[in-house]
Image (cartoon, rainbow, N blue to C red; front, side):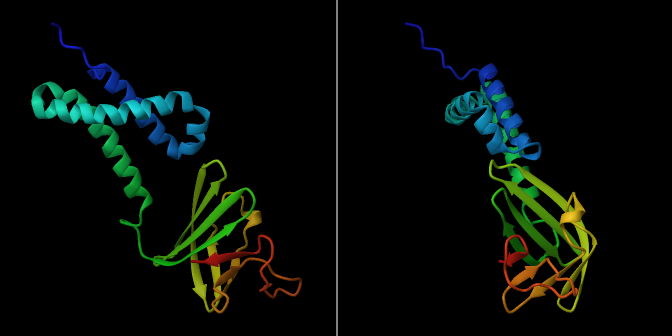
Amino acid sequence: MNAQKSPFSDTTIIISSAIMVAWLISHYINGMMANLFLFWYIILPALVFHVLSLFSTIRAAINNFKNARIKLASHAAVLLLLSGIIMAGSDLFKPGRILTATNNDDHYYDTLILREDGTAEMYGTSLIGTTDTYYGNFRIKGNLIIFTKKPVEVDRYFPDVIYWDKKQNKLFTQQNSDGAFITKAGFMNYFDIR
């Protein structure tokens, strides 16, 4: 009697691994969630196949490591890329945070991070999971945060100076006609400090 051939051949595992790698890299292009919604008919079967083939690969490696090397290398490539993306997005290799503040409207969720070395990061996440990242520089003078380079793409929507209200635990971005900061929370005029 012939043994039934496993659907998890080297070729199919390499193809599913390539799809997983492409999907993980899309995190930096237009968002993994956006691509999942757009290409669900490709990504979901490949994801399920890849997870199931991982168990088959482990079993094959236990039985005969030499014959499972290609499968192991394919899965390792995906795991290494995933680990790299997680580490790149973490604070592991970055200076400490002074503060993290968020602002959300009906389309975006913005996160402003100020770091001890004077760098600023702005992460804008949309409803469909796309993320834009911008970098800038700042200095603090009293309760004012002064940006020498704004962490935004279109700087006309983001001021050069914002007010740090420590009592309300907010960063206010708008000034009245006299130049005083408006410290009453309104639509899109503040960041909540976390």
